[in-house]
Image 1 (cartoon, helix red, strand yellow):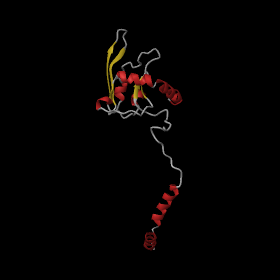
Image 2: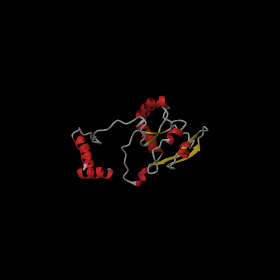
Image 3: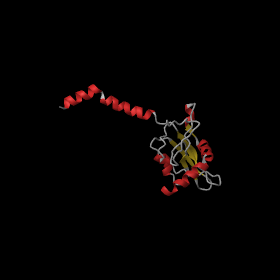
Image 4: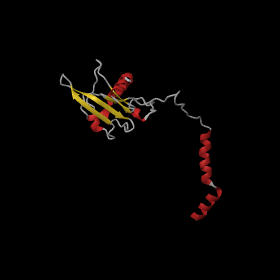
Length: 162
């Protein structure tokens, strides 16, 4: 009996018409298209984009060269060298992030005790030369200065969940 039912289903092409009914049903619905560069969709305040280094309000860099972000990075994308300053504090002499290696996981951000390294909500970057993939300390600080307002706003919105 099952063979006969299956034969008539294949003969009448019921599965084909079921598929076509779905297509026809969606054909007359309004289209949802985002024209990306001109229109942007809203992003979550937890979106993880390009990394940046932050500064204190007095202009001093926050990084204390504890190297926890370097240890936490699963892709080994962060390289840090440090030295002692005259006042006895450690500061970075070399801080580099290779964006080709970075997987934007946020482990560096979570491990930082002074909230120095953050992942911004900026994702519209490109590189024309492979050497541009390595961001040094000055570039990371410039990104932090550029996006400090959005970083602090996102941090305040997310503070209740940390």
